Image 1 (tube, rainbow, N blue to C red):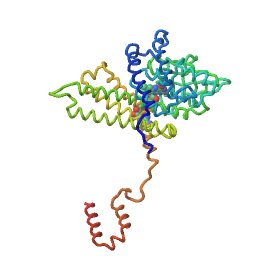
Image 2 (spheres, rainbow, N blue to C red; image 1 turned 30 degrees about the vertical axis):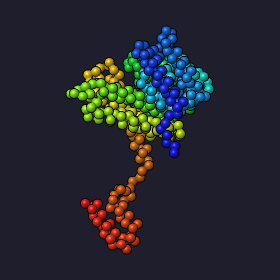
Image 3 (cartoon, protein in one colour; image 1 turned 180 degrees about the vertical axis):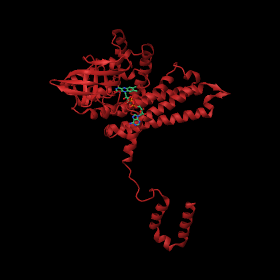
Image 4 (cartoon, rainbow, N blue to C red; image 1 turned 90 degrees about the vertical axis):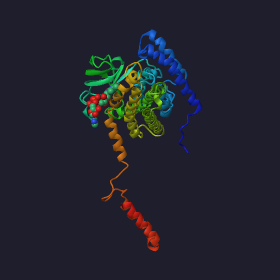
Length: 424
Ligand SMILES: Cc1cc2nc3c(=O)[nH]c(=O)nc-3n(C[C@H](O)[C@H](O)[C@H](O)COP(=O)(O)OP(=O)(O)OC[C@H]3O[C@@H](n4cnc5c(N)ncnc54)[C@H](O)[C@@H]3O)c2cc1C
């Protein structure tokens, strides 16, 4: 029997260490020095770098990469169990060397980069000596690649890129931009002449690429390979987001339960009021359902491929946003007026749920993927009636018992009565 929901004791020890390290080291850093993890100020780095070193010493740096690329090669299932912890603490993914959007970009470099490209960009990204951004979405076309216009034209020993991108996360702070053109993905240093970053939005940037020239070796993977590379990148990213969302949901749930046991109303703690119990029970089940789906998807990727788990990844993508929305809303509600302030993480969590429904492709697209792929396992019924139409099934079943029904009048009467009863 291969189904096993237990965690090996040695790995549980790692998980316990991660939990304690995040709670005791990362959370205080986030509360006092928010954003410290991406700072280039030597004084701030002196606070952050020793934490990264502890992660490296523990063999947990760049969790998502295979050993030959410098990661521990844990696989997706173990990564899911760790991400369930990291997702609770803002800068934990970066301190473990697994922060988006760099992770997806590193995965692309690892899979499609030449040795020279890996030397130049992958290893510095892994060591967080440089940062990157992913420039795919376009203002007129969202994330539909068939509507993209950004294009690269070869001119001698250079590619010349023209186009406009929207919502490139952390583009302004990145050293290199992975730019998805209609004819390939190109790595563009941010300071290249012609890269124009608009003032707004401030975090997720609107960028114009005006006659941006890069050498030929800045094309990543094959020419015209943009769609294939983008799919690979986004598939991994989506499931990692879902893993970290479980942490957010659990955090809201913990707050909900603590409050339920702490607050009294009308002569009893609110945990004794049935509607509060319903909120807790519904939230518990929804989080567990999401968690099982995410772990099953991670297991599927480990045992086959990201491509084989496409339907599951799409299902996790839109479900995690929904569960986060519902659970954080209930938790906020249970904290009453305090829940509506920014004095706890709940309001930001709840406000973040719609963002999650849009980022990495809108939920509608993922629902379409799930429905289309699931329907491939079905075909239309033959004739007028659905397969489960009882009269037709019963008629077929009667043929199986034809001899008995002909030779045993008592059984024939039994069957006729049952049929009349069923037809009422
Ligand atoms: C926090 C965040 C970070 C992001 N980071 C990046 C990044 O680093 N790089 C990058 O390139 N992009 C990034 N994006 C952009 C993201 O990929 C797009 O927002 C997303 O793909 C949707 O595109 P859009 O915003 O133009 O929405 P639209 O495509 O305009 O969609 C708006 C609405 O229209 C409807 N709709 C659209 N298409 C369909 C459809 N096919 N079927 C049914 N209904 C549909 C849906 O209701 C949808 O919510 C990020 C987005 C967010 C929110």
